Image 1 (cartoon, rainbow, N blue to C red):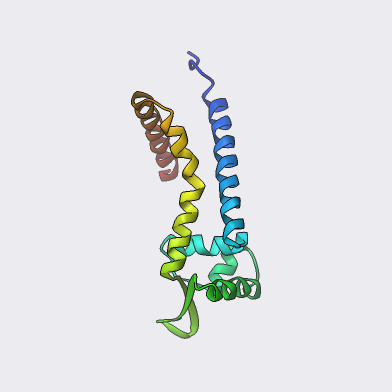
Image 2 (image 1 turned 60 degrees about the horizontal axis):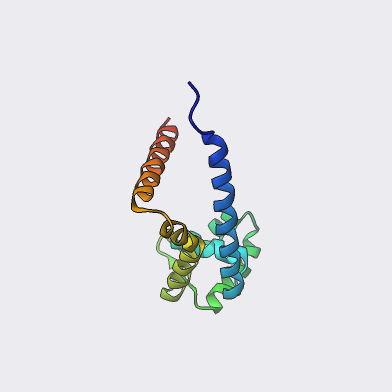
Length: 148
């Protein structure tokens, strides 16, 4: 028995549209904030609850520690991140978001998904529930795959 719609095709189309809109709004946010992609990557890494060292940041970005240091210096100048001593090794420095950096990064996340509010607004409550149920199924399937 074949599915009533071509699920894979629909998901490919959805993913493409999702990536296009998210990337467009993300790029617009970066330009308005005057940040480079690597600087935003650093902010996002710190935003998701991590205090990182220069080496960690360099590895995450796939750049040398010197290049990571330059990006960090700019973010420190902008007062978006702060350097502190590593409690386990005083020679090492850890980076963390400042309140200003946390607020800016939260705005970045919101800008990236703002268009979803527009999509949701044109759906009826019943359609919203149907999509919520479908995406919950997708998340459950993804979790099953990850647990293998």
